[in-house]
Image (cartoon, rainbow over all chains, first blue to last red; front, side, top):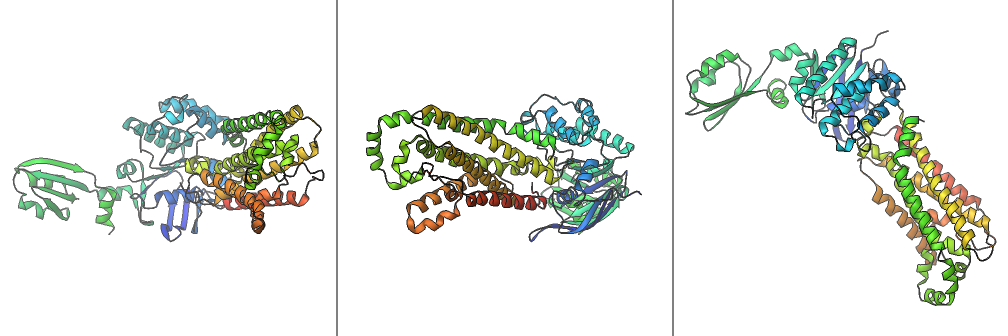
Length: 295
Length: 269
């Protein structure tokens, strides 16, 4: 019988009177790369820690590959890999000692055999003390330990923090190839671009509640840009009537800033002939996206 | 119990065990080496002790100053500070950190994501605490015995020495159990070393004050030191089963409660 990789039902975690997560319902299918996004403090790490049984749920339940996260936590851990958001491996160990220690819990020599191969792939020195490693190298260690036993499910929490672009790209390649092999990925992040690059579906969490579960394509169609233009003269009047201008714009002296969901060609046409001193186009923060779509 | 975790803990605590054992052994043997000089200068020493307040002697567990002139009495007076206080501090600091360090060091996020149950983590770490305390007591007791044999001028009661050593071991195990219990109650992950050391000192002072002040003798029962018979020179010195029961009973209760709490504890990082 085949079970969903993750099945979360009415899951609630409260910290005394403080909010953690409230009535979360979610299903992640086997073989999926599932995104889990939300701003900092939204409840992403709390959800993951309940899945890993670091925290006990106040209400509801969660199952991983059919196993209950509270009753069957050891069985789940044998089949799951986890990359925490902040990598703090044992500082008194060397990189190799830490990975051997991690591998020893899986009991299979296969896990230990993968150590040199993965250390090579992530360009990590085996003999260095963890206390002397940079945060990026600690992150690499954290990634490697999660792949040692070829897990059926990988739970990652802000995995790209601290990694340089080359290592991010290697990590994403590894994720894709392991996913082709059948590994499910639960990818938690506050970086929309990372999630868009990898995931087919995404759950959006805000203030402890799931706001929406969407196909990544749908989110892409809603793609917003945050634009700032500084003019040499006054701000031209024709921009206010531009279609796709979300909630007008903020004017500050000779500069304007706005969230734009319209056609880029129309914007360029509207700006044609205007005396522009500077212009930036960037991805809006998740909070800004939520302000537009979920308020 | 998980073998990897057990060996890792044994290794990571080895340096601290060596240092504490070396310090206590050195202090015990070095002080015993002064026993001969102490006897030779007994008149001057008695005159000096006579001007000390009674509390100063009670602090070292001495009820009768003449006891100091027997080799076992002299050993016992020093053993109080070195073994009963320093050894207890070692035990409580070791046990209060052994689980908690995974939380404040944030390594629990790795350890508890690997296939090991919390029960196995608890048992592995508890075993290391017990082994370390046994090792400390074994070495220091052997060192104490050798010192007594080397320094004695006349025979002494070896059984009394062994009984006192047994009490010392049980006291250390009690403080270890107390340290574990305190550590599983901590919600915000941070070291509780200062609190642990302070607790040992406060319990020792309560015991001392209760001995000096008859009106406060009842308060001594708050302290585990009250349940250690320090009157080793007394010919009627015997094992008191009630005291043994006190230490073993409370230690089991604290360890069992700690395990129950740890199995259901939210690990905040």
